[in-house]
Amino acid sequence: MLGFRGHFSSKSRRYSTTLGKLRQARADFRAAQEREALGLEDREPSTVLVLADWQYAGHGHTPGESALAATIARGLQLNRDTARGALHDQLTLEGVTA
Image (cartoon, rainbow, N blue to C red):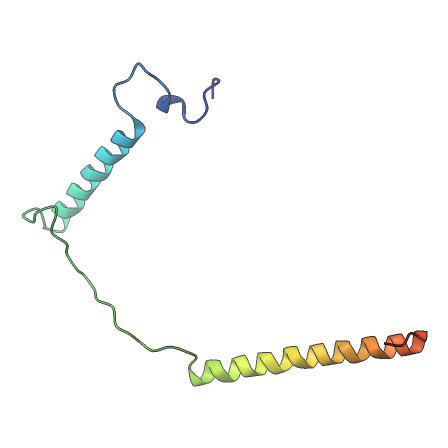
């Protein structure tokens, strides 16, 4: 914009602030608003509040997902076999030996 590379206000030497400082000030203000709305204004900013916890739920497919995955795999293999057979038949009709 106007010959500058990047945002026009990030290249000016006349202003004493940068976009990074403005964004940080905005983020701090919004965080303070959120703490006040949640009633956490008495907490120190370095305090971490845990609202939920993570638990290991297992790995792999459920039995239904396993059946669906097996059905899809069988369908894909059938399509490959059918295409391979059709190609072989076409080449045989054309007299090309493979």
